[in-house]
Length: 347
Image (cartoon, one colour):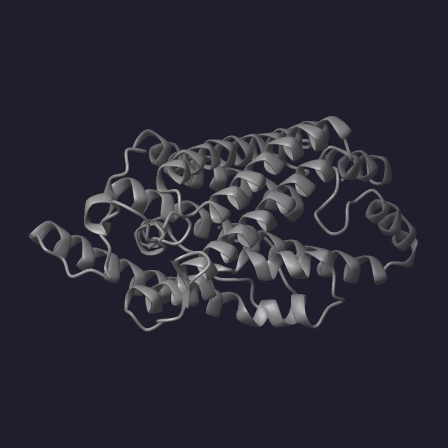
């Protein structure tokens, strides 16, 4: 999350430093990979996983309980702190603008704001509603459904972004869409089969692998396309290009922040406490980064439209560029750069 665009009449979102990233990683815990508290034969929460609804019998369990509660409180504080930093920009560029597909996706990407609170209330025995058909706590089912919505939004945004920057390439759409669809189906299956803990753990591992590959490839493809655009126009020409900076910045965060955590979660997939902690980091961070990307893209689009409205000779050009976009997920940076080179070869 870096400073990615300038907004007129408002301050750009404030972004975290590297140290705050670490705190966020420790804080945003136990949502995407949180175990379900379900009842079936020969199942004991303390033997499969430390469960806060049962009184901890060992010192280790008490330590796990303390860590889990601390992580939940920290995650809620950090998620709402991040939300407060971008709230004014959200009102300006999301709620005051035309309702579009990205508005729904933005709301889904912020799923952890609700899911973390529901999960904390559930492990604190504040939600005592039981769903007899599933034999599972209602709170866990809500968290599971919200995580599916959040993952769906992330997959749609990054697939559409890669599809747009490659000038609507069907090959890109098919490759990323297939991987994302497989991950989404597995997420739904895991939510439905939450009673079967052993099967659920295998499905969770597949989801981690698919999401890691999906996000990594999507980020690399978009960054590679931006590098091609920079080669066309030169580094000095594109030094102030906020659109290229936005795409490259998001890709670097995915490659260097999210992907290593996902790889560690896969390597440590042995059912231990640390593994579950790493599982819980990945989806909230991905959702947060995706929400910020959508917000910054809205801000960039608004500034670009204002600049071109001030120059009627460029208005037709801007309309043509927008026609090559898929909704508002950005366009092909190479097309942008080639058009800029033709219009202003000495710039």
